[in-house]
Image (cartoon, rainbow, N blue to C red; front, side, top):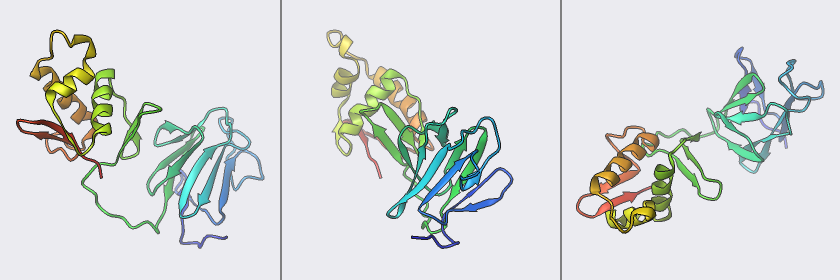
Length: 204
């Protein structure tokens, strides 16, 4: 099925638009690719963009220098949304999908992959300390529920169960986590303090 000219497209560093007129679109150094890039950093068949239903995905085709979506290396497939950056070798494209209905969502888009240990906020990979990740993973598994400081202390600091954890340690850890996952840590939209009870993580 062909895609209309008004559908998704890539823009390259020069501003040129490359419309995704097919369900499968390849980027690479080979002349057979849909977008040909003459660069030693680009593999012959570097990356593939494909449509699956209403969604678009990017696949790395075993390239030497990798493919990156929003600075996160593509391993297998990652989905694409309007405004995502797509780096192949030393060339960075921007994915545009004008058919997407844009809505300003005040709640950050939080993804926690507890199997892979990967956290993304608004589709950007976030690096957390071990304690920050332990706290987020604990709250994420119980999102929507109020978690007491005692429960958090036992989950995040199991090595100190005998001596107990001070409130200020938990409060400082929550404060640090908010700086990582909130757009405005002073006005949290994800991690809420429930006065006298504990903390609650809410996701969109």
